[in-house]
Image (cartoon, rainbow, N blue to C red; front, side):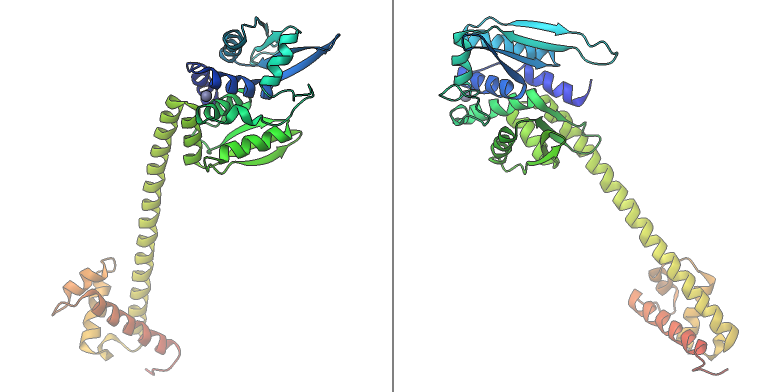
Length: 316
Ligand SMILES: [Zn+2]
């Protein structure tokens, strides 16, 4: 089962709660997945389609609890293998349906289609969370955190997409909208923002498993960075030592090490003997011992001498 499906299953099993919140969630679900049917005598019917059985049952129950409205659930099995079943919650045409659709913000006061988010539905904090849960159940998905962090909600209703985006951004979650063919895609990319939204919607188990994977990934990245960093430093040290030995060998083969001052000569001889020890260790082997900066200074002098010989500024 994908992370997305698990999250939706969890959300669809949350106790429906207060009737204000139930209305908000149902309104969001209908706005996302509902279709209004006109029949003769100005009657309207409604059907809501979903691929998740738990969501279909939830819609059925909310219609019953809130409006004492009897709906029916139709299941259509997809002919092709691997395709999910789809569920249709159908409400027959009637005067009551028109009233419900107006209350849930699908129709305006004149009975025309209304595309945006009806503000009265999300006045309270509890209802805003319920509305977000509804839009996610209706058109949301979230990647498994093992991969790239991505949560999205898709709808073909441009006005509603903007309203959802605003609603999410009341919580400073940096939601953005992009267009995919005829769809509006509201998406979040940052792991902290996705976690916050899961929390707002009430997907606490999904949130915990997301957080666990994130912590594990962060640690793994940190270890990789440290290893890369150490490898880079080690390579730098090795390259520097190779260059030092090359310089000293070059001086020995041209002017000879005995032309150097005693302190430089001692340095050169020890470096040749121990090509792969650190500068600090080199310093400890000198008589008397010298600190790292002293060693560095002498190494630098040897390099200057080698360069001068190469440029014929020192004759031999
Ligand atoms: Zn509420």
